[in-house]
Image 1 (cartoon, rainbow, N blue to C red):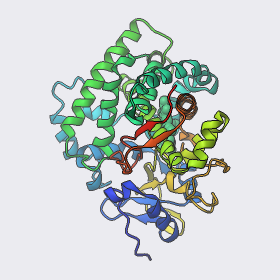
Image 2: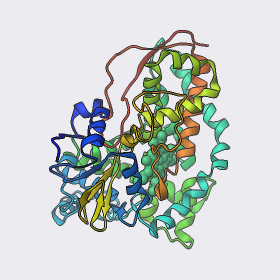
Image 3: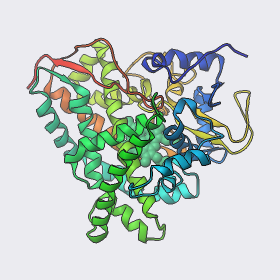
Image 4: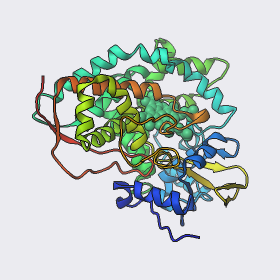
Length: 429
Ligand code: HEM
């Protein structure tokens, strides 16, 4: 037994979770969190075991837990009560005028919350939109979008790299891929932030009405977009989803909507955080900074090490379908398990000097994008955006300095990223 005390929801943990992960790996590799009763899995090998066995560690928990966070709050979650009748009833009362049935929304799993065979059915629909070839073809457009954001940002002596660059870049790209108007990107960002904080933030569960209102706006907007594609299909992801409604896979209209929500949320917050976290790590290592800036060929290694060192997705949910033993700990059937990807990536058993940021290291095997059947659909896109974004940034500034020493992190225990990063540039072209 161990006296480890770990609270993933505290502000202190949010600002630096890594010392806590080290303690968990050392003393409590499967740690049972009092209250919600989550089982947190922190060692590299065990995280692999969890994500490689979807038949034992089901992804349906993703849906159950996010929805429970929305209705009762993440800190008060009781996996046994998640989506129980009273929570459902409370939300159903808010349903008037929403334009959709919230209960149907909560019980329609997207690809990330599905297990085989439904998972393969859903994933196949969008897979071909994300092949490495298709993503590589986007490079010139991503470069244009990056430069347009840099043009605006570099008019200022002092700027917020997050608000001015790492937020607009991925939001514009995913909006274009989906085929929706990129000038609505501020709305997309607002909807996506509301969803993340409302389901996994410290105040989650306190404002289900606000969350449903965000869904309402989002739903109204996307339903209209989907309707337009039904009448007039285009070469974009929404048209691909709409075509699947009529095809063999018979996507339901709610599944189409949930897909669009997932792609929008997964496609922007994460890449924003990758770039912000990477920049913070590089700024703390002036010698490595100078090398990356001088040699664009080092940017991909810098991006991979950023993913390993301080990944945007810290952990996610699974649920046991049977009694199972992991790292000598018995986990009962029906338990909620959280594989901590960000801890696995700091495991000394896998990466030597794991707490050191080192662009020269061999990062192969990092699990920042997960592993197995749910391996991130957008990994090639995220890598492209971060590489191109940094390449263009480093072309245009010769020195970057932080203006604030404190970093405020996004309010979510699942995701990690700086809310803002105020910088000045030495020389701007
Ligand atoms: C640095 C950026 C990103 C990181 C760190 C990241 C991380 C992850 C992780 C860890 C998973 C695995 C989920 C699991 O095992 O349950 C995942 C899945 C997924 N990601 Fe990403 N992601 C990123 C960017 C993106 C982008 C840009 C998109 C879309 C445009 C995207 C779409 C998805 C989707 C749809 C899934 C679900 C795949 C499935 O369940 O089969 N992600 N991502």
